[in-house]
Length: 159
Image 1 (tube, rainbow, N blue to C red):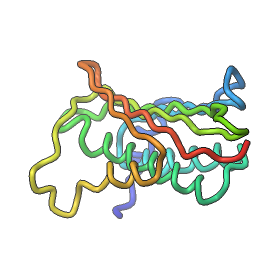
Image 2 (cartoon, rainbow, N blue to C red):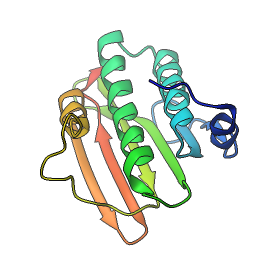
Image 3 (tube, rainbow, N blue to C red):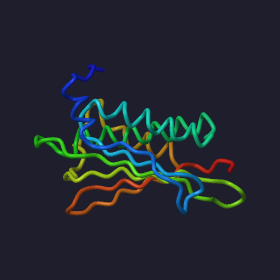
C-alpha cells in the first residue's frame, strides 16, 4: 500500500470525527465524517476498532465489523466520486439490543457520489461486497440521487 502524503491526511481531517453520546442505543454511538481520500481508510479503521473495544466487543466479531467498515470505506474512496474532487464519507454506528440477551452493531457508510456497476471483468478487484457479506449478518445497499448508503448489521454477540 502506498503511504498517504500529508495533503491526504490534512484533507481527511478537514471534516470532523466525533464519538456520539448515549441515546436510545445500548451505549454511545459513533459518527466519523472524513474526506474520501486514501488516508481516511486507516482513520475509519482506528475509530471503529476503538469504539468496539470500548464496548468490549469480542475480538473475532470486532475484527469482522472493522473489515466490513474498511471495505465499505475503500469502495467509497475508489468509486463514489470518480474523477471529481473527493467528497465525504460518513460512518454512523450504534448498538441495538438483539433477542436472547444479545446485541448487534448497526452501521451505515454513506457517500454523496454516484453508484456505478462493477465491470464484467474486475480483474483482481471486486471482492469488497463478498468480504462485507461474509463478515456481517446483513448488508444492504440503498441507492438514491443523493448518493449511496450501505447498511450493515453485525452478527449478534452477548450483551
